[in-house]
Length: 115
Length: 112
Image (cartoon, rainbow over the protein chains, first blue to last red):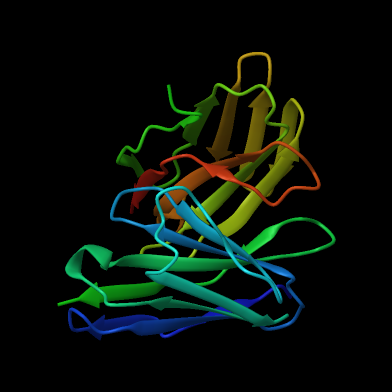
């Protein structure tokens, strides 16, 4: 149980375009989901926390207008990187929170390359 | 001083060796301690979850917490090439909180 999927697993886009990443909890309902980014040889940095049906809470330094997060259902959260630039190239990982145990279950990650 | 310090390695050991991975932390409010394993280009998976000082064993893995020294360890016995991954410690303050503070991760290679 507690499986989280992400789609796509790898995406290449051109500078200036937008890209959407989906995060799904497959076998449980997640009222809270998290988005992280991870640069090579670096740890996971929390970008934002999203609660189903409400606005996401962004960490300091994360541009909310650039990284749009939507958590419209208990099993789906999306991260849209708008007007992507090469510096946005990174590994984006989502996690879904288990309401009972307060554990986070991580997705497999999405590698974004902006050319 | 960062909240959680973890030597990024890389650490290279021969197959069958005992591996010791460590993190130190500065905030005494951390009460829950986790170790995640992350294979290259994959998301982290939870290996061990402990609360308070002491040891917890699961197969070849032992997690150790010393709250008085603010020091946590993960031991891997009889290491296998399949253990080659990055190991991240993660800490949180409360049982009713999702918020995790991660270490930088230690990259481990187990050489056959």
